[in-house]
Length: 458
Image (cartoon, rainbow, N blue to C red; front, side, top):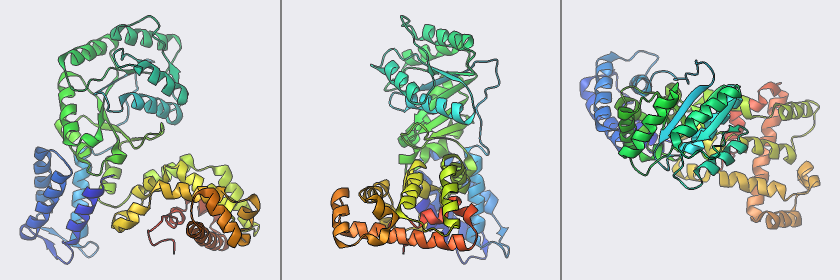
């Protein structure tokens, strides 16, 4: 996420190192580079120009104190302005209404709107403890209703069966009535998308909006569209009373233009959620300060810690802690458990995106750090016998050949996994000796050691 923008800005800030003051003269070239970086990231031109002017005014004549270098002072200014550009604070869903709170979803076809309905339902159910009913008013796209029914089953939420109803407005109204009878907290209405904005589409969704009077009207947009995403959001906002935006496919966007443009071009409509992958739990509330931190290569430790708290199996953690405290060795069974925990958190790439300093890794290291390597490591361990996983020292010549054959890898790959395991085993012993078992499952550093090609596994 934001790789190209982060790399470009990092290079720009390094050029400021050694300056004693941020003057208009030495800022001119730096701001020009920042401007080019934002334009390359497909941020809207008027947004870029206003942003650069804000930085120039804030940085003019700033004295750099003993605690900050000029580069650090500039990064702080840019960080503050990025946060402001994206909305200052997290904008939460407004569900303060007589139940059911109605949420209307709008967007173009292919934006990930229907998937986002399911993701939002899951987020509300699991994180907000709300009961949710989802309904599809998309009667045009083949299998659209079936798709949402399947997703609703997957995320364990209620689905409204439209039966003989074929008019989108009637379906939406009936879904709201059903939610009232079932005493559901939130009802989410999915609407038809089109391949482009057209009058018929806008008229229909305006009619649905008037009929059900939603407390939230969310526009779902594909983040990989860049500046076009912002333009589409603006067009929708001009004809529909949007309350917020969901940006999807952000994990596949190396630029970031949509995120930085949307709020400005929609007259201040906040981004409320971002989609970070295909899985149904890959939806995150949008925190401007955390995203700014990621853009500037400083990671997002808060989100990482929250994920650890939410997704790490605490029973497994306690079981391992007790085992090590009794003097028993960390074995390959334990190592496999740690790898599965990492995979459950979105994999190596997702974790790297939130770790500080990852932007400074060499490109070849970043290329190697993917979830294919994680799956390969698991395949190697899964091809071992239970005895081998519990007593790794027995894994020699013929056993290595059998494991390589069983996992579809090579003896070299098996050796690499064993080496990474040995490094993790040593780290666990150190933690145990220092009495740091409580910190073990928060061991972001330990997980960094598993990143192939990062230079940290040696």
